[in-house]
Image 1 (cartoon, rainbow, N blue to C red):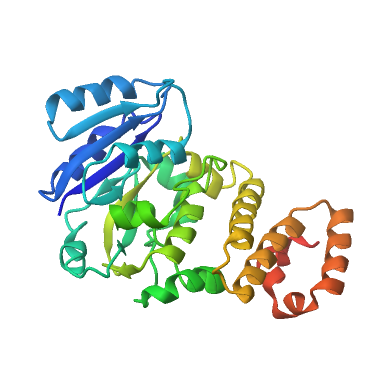
Image 2: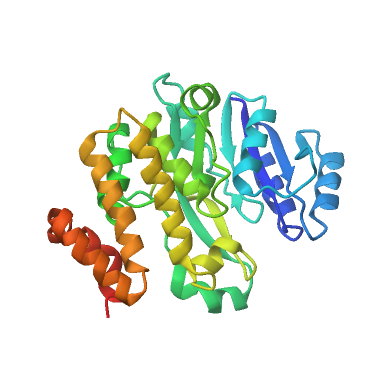
Length: 313
């Protein structure tokens, strides 16, 4: 195996060395690709030092040296990669020694196009633990049981939290399958949740197989300045970002001819449920009435209730 590990770097001077060295522990890692995204701190200098120190580390920036966000930054890393397999790692996260144990066996089968595992949680400070333990606890981010690849996409859509989640840090993909079947790759239209949208589409187009699900293969670093941590802890309004996420998923589903109609309808219901849940009160009740008339089945099924039961009053 020749694995290219892609690390977008933004405001991560304190963490990127640990991330890089956690990837370099594996002989299977052919290269670690750092894409520096105009960090406001000293991350670029740290990356340059890592390139000097380790011959498997490569460093790139966007052609305009600007800040483009995690999606386009990962896309540039994929473009620059030379390995047969792609793995991702956020600059404030790190791999554990078992990261590629399942992959080494599963990728012997040509039909396996991707493998996903479980992600753990590491608090970088007592302050971070105190603030965010109620959000994350010590729980694994994982799919709760092993599924056939054909069940992964509908399981995420129909079962939502009951299916579980897999993280981009715990995902490994065959590069040729990714390039052939995914267009676009990460979308530049989303500054947050672009990895979630990517994983939905990926699980539709590629056969993704379960790896190690009952223990962590990588660790998510939780600290005070992590943008997605602030969203999950509601320091950034999660409503707006999730509406944008589901709008992208809904637009894609409408235009993808091979998605069955009942799945398209369900995705649209989820999108509308987020819109209703976060609308101002007068508009909310108008939207509910409209949907009672036009789509009573989804109201009755409880799709909307999942998302806004607690926000109606």
